[in-house]
Image (cartoon, rainbow, N blue to C red; front, side):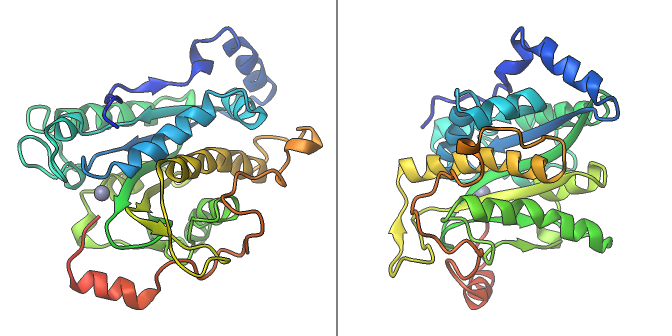
Length: 302
Ligand SMILES: [Zn+2]
């Protein structure tokens, strides 16, 4: 999937006449600035599943699905579907054309050596200073070469309450996506990851923001009901993307930004799952801690 570009895409709501209605809504809730969600993918060019996830997010957000319409009315989504387009064009697995792993250069990207990263970082810094918006989520989408399922990496903080808040989105996603594993999700501050988007922006953005790396297996997922790993397909990757997008509604409902006044038939019982009778406790999918240790000793990166 090489047709995406690194151009930052804006959601349709910003350009549409309906923008006026969202301004009115902001007027009705003067204490709230507009929430902003920023997604990026393919900083590692070989991780093509990330593009299918990104495609699923975009397809859902621009659709006529009632949940998507509500999200567009309340939240701005900025999406960079391909952070390393030249690396993708060249068929690189991990690096830029000059041999840099861009996901280790967030701290001080050079406009000459890391132009796409430099531009995206500048945009994020600029948006973070814009008083009209609150940059609340940054999610960088990757694919993982050994783990099963979808899962996330998040940051750890001194503030326990912030740590707890950070676990909310992955827990909600776990309820919506049977192939997403909360048990594989982990929070760390490894020195080796200091130059990643998730780590760097976790330190830059304010305390109410959430920065994650969203990983998805290159090959398979297990759900509570499955006895063997199920191979991922383009469709199931895309479905995970759609579930990521719709989880923002659950999150913002929980935080009272969005009142749940949707018709009954589109409330939370209608979930895009791969299976209908899933154990939704978010436990036990995929690999366990021992596998993660093994991965560490093998020096596997993501
Ligand atoms: Zn990666």
